Amino acid sequence: MAHSRRTDADDFLPAPGPVRAGRAGTVEEAMAAIADGAKVYFSPICSVPVALLEAMADGADRWRRITFVTDYLIEAVAPFRHAGAPFHLISLQPTPAVEPMRAAGALQTISASYGQFLRYLVPGGTAAVDVALVQVSPPGPDGRFSLAGGGVTAELVRRVPLVIAEVNPAVPYTFGATECLRSDFDLLVEVSHPLVELAVPPGDEVARAIGAHAASQVPDGATLEFGIGAIPESVLAALAARSDLGLHGGMISDAVVDLAASGALTGRRKTLDPGLHVGAGVIGTRKVFDWVDRNPDVYVVGSSYSHGIGVLGRQERFCAINSAIEIGCDGSVNAEVAGTRVVSGPGGQPDFAIGADIAPGGISLITLRSTAAGGKVSRIVDRLPETSPTTLSRHLVDRVVTEFGVAELRGRTPDERRDALRAIAHPDHQASL
Image (cartoon, rainbow, N blue to C red; front, side):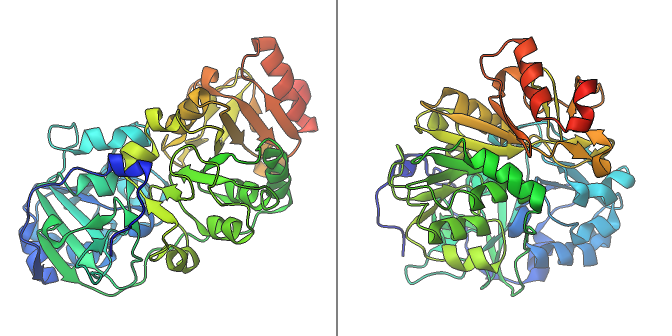
């Protein structure tokens, strides 16, 4: 049954796509429907359609070339066993999981923020896809299915020429842009496998110290966005004593379940969607999958709403909490590459930093450990190396948090920025800044 509560997000629900066959089929029929030379999108993170990708890997010799397109991956997928022969990959948010494709020379990347992804993947885009492989829940009493992921996936399936869905009982039913009719799919294949999970280990002493400093900057009634990792989730853990916090971001995770259980996360003071926990996807373990299942307080939305600058700018007290790998003394942030190792792409961080900058009472927190390599390397550096990408330009950086405190950079001169960052660097490295 569809969600009955009227909300601001309803104005941004994806437009209906073409009426499709909605036919039940087999994995073999799904494989036969994918043409040689196709660009094939598959839903990422915890929404990966594992059975369909395993079948493509097992039948790799039926194609001369297939180019997959996706974003953040937790782990390598089965087709990567055949990197370059025949499978290639375009990643919009590369992670260590794509290393087999990089090593084989079968990887290309597109530098983009999450809010830009959709425009590149739809017909006419620079990486327009021909096929979308997704996962959905079994249908409810009204015949509707629910996608395993919202965000770009929820909008893309309405516009791609061919849409093939796994129907998996492990997928929770969520309300919002994820709700689909049978006629939104060309082929539906019944499968049964666990969802890919992202288990974030508990934060250590340093992560907890960063979390406490960051939480001190978050007022009651703030609407939160947070990134992936132990530090952002340590911030959420430190907010359990706050009141009337809200959620509007890229992900709904295990930490959100705990924050809601503490009574701190109510959404009552949100400017948009009061009382609802809004996110582009569900990312975590079975704990959060079960919590969101038919939860009337959860609304999963498309990327134009979760990451839309105009939407974020209307959300009073919007607070973006994200991580970095290193930061220059001018405030420039690298959140993508550690040395020569690619950790991520820009993702949603630029979208949320801009949103927090223009939102009334908005706050953007960049969190990072002060050192790497066992304390030998400072993560606060004189300037970003030429080989490091600039994920956030210095003018978008508001507050930086390490285990040694908070540096407020917004509206400060270059000398003031350097002094503030030096004060939260590790004492062993302050003299070098």
